[in-house]
Image (tube, rainbow, N blue to C red; front, side, top):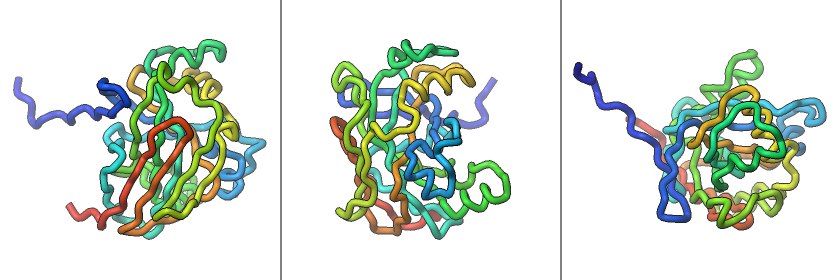
Length: 232
């Protein structure tokens, strides 16, 4: 038997140690900061956590220039605290949830906002707005043994040096342990999974030539320049 073409290579995320974190899946939590939920026209007091997924290959390292994607005129940044799963499980109890975390990173959930909103209005999936090439930039993954569990601390995003998003991880509607409980009730989580935990208020558009920096207290920044329109 001969392979018809080479398989997609594994996505390997960098860590703050000499280890490499193989990315399996990407789960994202929608509207997990109250002020962001409100700016998106939703009531944060009524929504339980919900998730959408992205391809592992959307993950790119901090410092890599990403192409402005096709089919959009409204490409938005979303700063995120990212959880890296190191131990699998299903139906995980809250008191055991953080045992499944390998570490934490800063990240971005870049979004074709116009396509997302159009899909939302039509009751269709968000894939065209969210699951976009190079749309999940990721900083260094710091193991829990190095940074502990990130339960509070500043999360900020700047564009060309101007602060656009600013909040505290403690503002998460559903903190990391709760997210793992909800997610593991629907899927068996596995080592290599990444969970993008939601973004604060202040999302907005970028253009070619902009540089985005995401910071979370205690973690390495994610730095993402925006390059020209993808044309290949």
